[in-house]
Amino acid sequence: MKSLILVIASLVIFLALGSASKVRYDNFKVFKIRTKNVEQQQMIEKLAANSENFNLWHSGNKEVHIMVSPQKVIHLQNYTRAYSLPLEVMVSNVQSLIDGEQLSKSTDDSTFGWTRYYPLSAIEAFLDEILAKYPAVTSAIDIGTSYEGRKIRGIKISYKEGNPGIFIESNIHAREWITSATATWLINEFLTSTDEDVRSLAENHDWYIVPVLNVDGFVYTHDTDRMWRKTRQPVNFSSCIGADPNRNFDSHWMENNGASADPCAQTYAGTEPFSEPEVKAIADYIASIKERLNILIAFHSYGQLLLSPYGWTGDLPSNYDDLMAVAEAYSNAVKAMPYGTEYTYGTSSGALYFASGATNDWAYSEQDIRLSYTIEFRDTGRFGFILPPVQIIPQCEDALAGLLAFVKKADELGYLEVKYT
Ligand SMILES: [Zn+2]
Picture 1 (tube, rainbow, N blue to C red):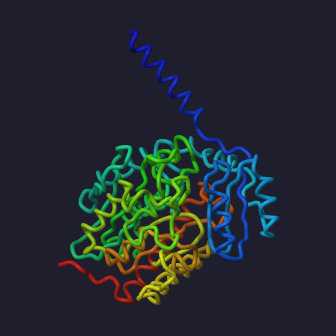
Picture 2 (cartoon, rainbow, N blue to C red):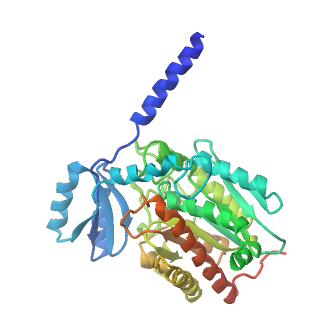
Picture 3 (spheres, rainbow, N blue to C red):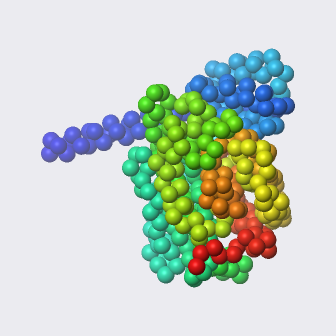
């Protein structure tokens, strides 16, 4: 009895701590700052590093989105005025966006749908249900184990022997919740859709899908800090935690300022290539099946962009024209949807920023997967990472339309020839 009371008491304390320790963003604002050159972009990035008062949401060569605590709004306004950088408010209160995102929570708790965002446990239950329901065409993929000891899970969908393979990595950045929502929706669609084109897409390709790669970070965004991006592995010479897993791959790691050496930065590259267990795990898995892969797509948000290699250099990849033709097909197909969502495309370094050690560069350069992309999903900054649940299904429909056109173009250009025997 005594121990039961103790257990209950500690549970109450734990629950109280759990809700009390959730990071709040009351009156935090996100500003859009127009920049004219890389120097100005880097100035803002520097401001964002090393401070709990700033958090970089997006950094491109034309505009930077930065979240600011209420205490530092004046500071940012003065700073940008001093350099004559145009400034506008993108989000006036981040906490109200987060609260709005949670509103739909109670509506369909019992079933997995796409009208709200789910925690990792629900996504895993969804995978288990799919695996149990479609044992003939699905199999579980054990990617490996995260720093905090969680299993990183994936699913393979294969309707027949001899298919070309498509790998989808998702939610490597913890706060990009729309990515795993899209990945799970696509899994469901590939198994249940009766649309002829979708059936052909599902059945004539082998799909390897990892809905949540950064499991520790993802759980942390649900339980503690909605805006967390990185892994959760401590850095032994710093009080800051985690590295940017999408800067941690062993391909031109840390070259050309494509990542940060500062553990407190959002783009910290880690202590060495593959220092993050989640990144090492997915790299090992992809390397083990690379003969089976023709296409790799890494799901991210936000920005509505398709990004091909390279991120680490401004040089163009040898099949640049084909990479752009495939991206254009995706972009045009999405634009033709009722939502009219516009995607732009280019190389990572050209269209967005220099980024070294990213999944798509590594897959392209080190694993010879000739069609490798990062896709930045909705939106372009109205809601940023906190895309309202009502947009989940429209976003997923955009992605499916885009993928259909993408794969068709890849086939036309000869990229779907099977490499294995
Ligand atoms: Zn991302």
